[in-house]
Amino acid sequence: MASGLVALLDDIAGLTKLAAASLDDVGAAAGKAGAKAAGVVVDDAAVTPRYVSGLTPDRELPIIAKIAVGSLRNKLIILLPAALLLSSFAPWAVTPLLMLGGAYLCFEGAEKVLEAIRGESHVEEDLTTLDPATLEKQQISGAIRTDLILSAEIMAIALAEVATEPVLLRAGVLAAVGVAITIGVYGVVALIVKMDDIGLHLAGRSIAVTRAIGRALVHGMPVVMRWLSIIGTAAMIWVGGGILVHGLEAFDIHAPAKLIHDLAHAAGHAVSIASGAVLWIVTAFLSGVVGLIVGGAIVPLVHIAGTLRGSKH
Image (cartoon, rainbow, N blue to C red; front, side):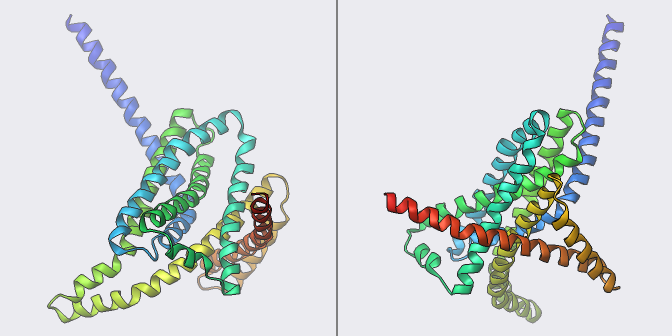
């Protein structure tokens, strides 16, 4: 009886060590995969605040919370099983699907740029005619749609880091990356959009320095939000363009990626100080040029399709 209990305890101890080792493997791989996806994470954080601009301050945090829940749903319920299934049974389909999502990002970003160039503001005017509940639902839906594509890129980058690992380890890494990045991104976004409220609170304090900081936040945040909206649009274009360029490499079309690589490295070598930053900026800019060209070509096609559909109705 005693020997049986000792054997059972030994088995439990062995299983515990195995589980601990597995968790260590997941944590290490998740950290590495998350670091590789850092560029897309920055883009995700830049894109989201534009979906709460123009809405009442008391609804900003609830809307961000709903978008965050939608983002987790995208990553854990839709993308994680899809990534595991595709990597196991149809790995050839991953790249075309990512490129389709990249083309959508290019289209959305290019449409905003073309509207700004033409001085069109009908979208904003249409939004103001909606009742608050409909407007909120529309903004959340748009944010979650965009998040699905950015999340797909994040999960694809993470998957590439553990593509040869067992399926359970792959699942654990993707889940860990998805949860950690969602909490990080939307925590930062919540802080950004509420910074003006923090400024108002500080402006009412008795200490002069604190009041000055508060006033600076209150006056500066509208400018920051406008720039974040611009950065968010640019992020959609350069991320979408980057997805397309890398996707073409998978189909042995290396010329666009090689040209961007060569130009970016030439610019980096030309600037001895902060060459890494120059390399990233040039790569993002040229990827954005690709995204703007592709998105600009898609915009009229979508509008023509919409016109034809409207004429049929």
